[in-house]
Amino acid sequence: MDALSFGLVLYLMGGMASLMWVWTYLRWPPFGQHIRPEGLITHHRKAGTPTMGGLPLLQVFLAAWVTLPFWPVGISWRGWLVFLSAVGAGAIGLIDDLLSGIRQRSEGLSPGGKLLLGCVVALGIFFLISYEGENLNFSVPFSCLQVPLVTIPAPLLFLLVLLGFWGTTNGTNLTDGLDGLAAGCGIVILAGALPLTRFYPELTALALLGTGLFAGFLWWNRYPARVFMGDTGSMFLGGLIFGLFLAGGGLLLLPVFAGIFVLESASVIAQVLSFKFFGVRLFKMSPLHHHLEEGEVPWRYLLPSPNWPEPVVVVRLWLLSLAFVILGLLAAP
Image (cartoon, rainbow, N blue to C red):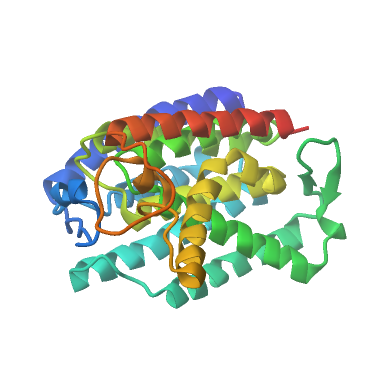
């Protein structure tokens, strides 16, 4: 069985397992979602919706990984890199969700705690590619240039890994604010990564497995959501995407493919800086998707809001994510 055929089997099995396991999870959810009082009033109805739905996705991924000795495509260090990135990020999100649920509020891990744990995972990834990735090359967007790993100084390489891991996982986390938004964008990006993994059978299989997992989850997470993925799911998604692009040599292409996450993150940074230095809010709320959706706030802001219904915002951002992926494919060698 070739990589694509095996990957499609994993896609179907992962999707069905995710669909059924999330359904089982919904019968005994450990925690409900906490909604911040300063949020849009349209979100208050979501209070109590089961969260931490990324846990069954992580469990299905680990269950698939246990069958690794039976995979016809075999697993190299590239597959282990994806595993470390995805599971490491998911574990950080799980700790955050557990602390949030136990404390009965929306905040879990402190930003410093998340950063420290992120550094630990990034350090593990850095050591793995330093010892095993001598043949790893990074593609430069919109060119045929390849940057060999061995030409990058170790401190700069670690910084690239840390920024990539932290930026991607936080980008997915920020995007996970509307029903089905992060899952749908993640599916588009994971599917778009397939051409980059064509030379590495285990990466193709893992990309299709991830696509199936989040497709199954989207069944329950689409508007109106019956479950939220929580930080466990959003960070697991970010870690999986980052690991696939890093192992496939597409680290420098990742900001193009995941442009939707860049936009969401940039909107938060712009909002904070604008308010800190000028005392003015650019957006109704950040991240960007909250500015686009309907709802009023008691403060003034500069940029006009289209006040779209939540499902409209989600579908249009899915389409924007697809546009970024197409641009990324054009930028790839």
